[in-house]
Amino acid sequence: MNMIDTERLVIKPLTPEQLTKYIRADNSLELELNLNPAPRTISPELKEALERDILPNLSDTGKNYLFYTLWTIILKEENKIIGDLCFCGEPNADGEIEIGYGTYKEYRKRGFMTEAVGEMIKWAGRQPAVKAITASTEKSNIDSHSVLERNNFTKSGETDTLFKWKLEIT
Image 1 (cartoon, helix red, strand yellow):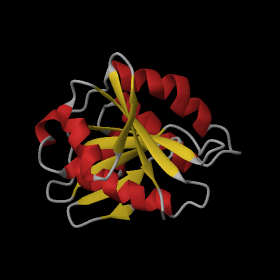
Image 2 (cartoon, helix red, strand yellow):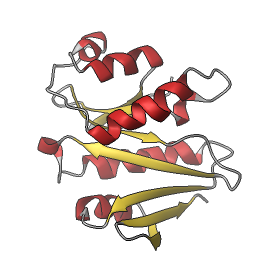
Image 3 (cartoon, helix red, strand yellow):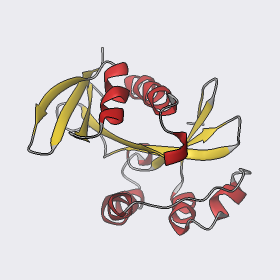
């Protein structure tokens, strides 16, 4: 089982069927996972990523779905999904994977995403082909910068609107 268990969180990769329920946002996923219902909206960026990248790649049985699916973050105390994260595909030729993440608004600034990203770094470090994790953040998203800095990422570049980050896996 690829579920990750921490003191406060359960981080669970969604199967393709569960991801379809996630997208419906009708609490069918919460019902299947025996979680308390929670209002969930999917950002336009996540919806696009789901439709363009995540779902098509999950149907390819030659690929390791754990590098393509969403991992839900469940707060044990409330038994609710409070955010999610994903990798943007399997390691490239240099052994790099990109991570993306989001915390539901009412659960921000409480260290949950810092904890979840830290656990995903440990998971990625156990995958033989992974040598580094990268991320991109909007320059204005100070909270996201903090999540990465607390997990020892360093800035590796920037564009007009984004900071690029990298963490070498040792």
